[in-house]
Length: 81
Image 1 (cartoon, helix red, strand yellow):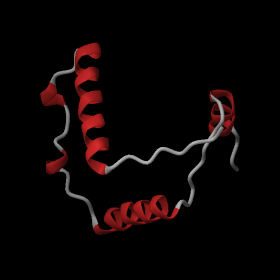
Image 2 (image 1 turned 90 degrees about the horizontal axis):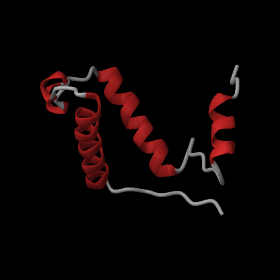
Image 3 (image 1 turned 180 degrees about the vertical axis):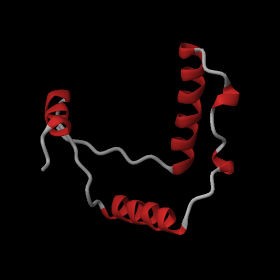
């Protein structure tokens, strides 16, 4: 069975925050070593690129789903030249 999970942005932000905390604990990284997302200033080209990525995701473009880990790994390791 193939299933695509869509997460609201707030849930994704919470997930990223928790993963960063876990990374700090597991790898001993200091929180001050990380970059605060509010401190990042994107160029206009980068903003357009990320806006296009958001549009593609909401429209379902370039979204891949897999039935198992093996098929996902095969897809990721495939030579795409």
